[in-house]
Amino acid sequence: MPGEEKLRALVIEDEPETALQLKRILEKKFPLEVETAHDCASARKKISDGRFDIVTLDFMLPDGRGLDFLEELTSADSGTRVIMVTGHGDEETAVRSFRSSASGYVVKDMHLHSRLVEAVENALTEINLRATEEELHRREAHFRSLIEKASDLITLMGPDGTIMYESPSIERLLGYGADELIGMNAFDIVHPDDLQRIMGIIGRGLSTPGATAVAEYRVRQKDGPWRIFESHGRNLLEDPAVGGLVINSRDVTERNRNEERLRRYREELEQLVGERTADLAEANVQLQQEVTERKQAEAELKQRAERLADFLTVTSHELRHPVSVVKGYATMLAGYLDRMEPDDLRSVLDALDVSVDRLTGLVEELMEVSLVEQGRFTFEKTSADVGLLIQTAVADMKARGVKNEITARVSNGSERVIADPDKLVRLLVILLDNACKFSPPSSPIEIEAERNDNDIVVSVLDRGIGVPEEVRELIFDRFFQVEEVKHHSSVGLGLGLYLARQIVSAHNGRIQHLPRKGGGSIFRFTMEAGPPKAGIDHRAMET
Figure 1 (cartoon, one colour):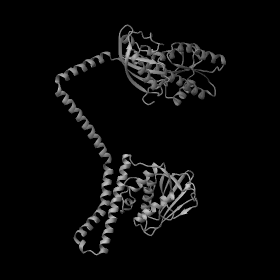
Figure 2 (figure 1 turned 45 degrees about the vertical axis):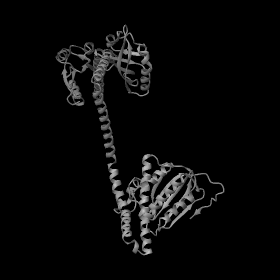
Figure 3 (figure 1 turned 180 degrees about the horizontal axis):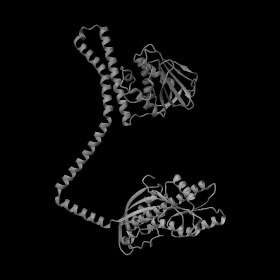
């Protein structure tokens, strides 16, 4: 890795050309600092001057045998990896080399390059493994030292409470030897009055790997009274390095006693201060309650600010027109009633009636939304005749003076539905009103009802302006209006389709908008089909 010191290698070879060849192979293939030695004496001198990580050793040297020098190197246990390089590639030499702890054995033949590279790679792997093991042992010793010198008690126990380890601090805290409780059940030294609570806490944590818990309870001292412990536990049963519940505990007996003394002192002090202190405490509590309530109110106001702004904008726009009409005609009647012709008076009264109906509709719509928000929008479901409910909704629309022709078709088998009749009529009126509002006065409106498995599917079809694709998911939101996208306005608060979705959802159905081929919209919803009524004519019905 960048910044790490290079590993060192020593080539021990008496033939200069072979030594140079080995040196070049090592330097080209590996990040090694390579030196050479031509005999045992020069090799000993270099090794004494500095440690080498890898040594390639010739089998025969001028001043000794390579195998003897191999045993000399490996007996020192310095971690140096020795690779035997020989021109005598017999089996006995190889066996003796590996018995003397050689890391590799390479014959000087046509495969020298590849086999030397392979042997060095294996040696480097062994070096890395040894370094990793040494670092692991160092860390284990470090953490064991920390645990053994910690003032808190460290306990490792199994899921059934069997103690697997106790840190030496147990002797100072409870008087038990570090090994005295190993194999015993930790619950045996817990106070009987605390036992069920502690077992419950541990039991709940067993099902969640890594779960933590904090508890305070009493523990029996070996030769003394009960002590109060505060423990922090963690479930490490699935950690292969731990395999148990780790409990870190400390003696809080004196702390609790001091807290109890402080509590009594405060009580005495409060008694001396008397009513003035009590009044102050009560005022403080009230102040805290007011602050809390104010923060809650501010949060709610912040959340509703945008919705309220939309509501005020839309509502003021929708109320202004009918109120202005009523105000204007009321002023006219006040000044000219005795001089008005009957036909003119009838026109004024009709206009007032339309405006009051519009105001009434807006108020009723707001009241229904209020009931939805309060969870008081109730339903009384029964088996109802779909055709009659559609006729009722169509009659309602005609009474409002809509000019569009409305036709209805109820298919065989779709005559009855499980629904709240009044709410279903309200749903149909909302969809019909929406279709008429965004369609030309002469444009026909259609209603279709058909059965699909266990559902009744009702569709309202128009040839109006349609809904842009990018807002089809928004039209059922409160206060949303398509004309906002089209940059024009029409009658309504943007609550009709919102109420429609609430009604359908309360009947466990679905409502959606679909573009109509040739232009216009299809609003389609589903509700649970009801059983056929005895004696009913199941032929298709059209109105």
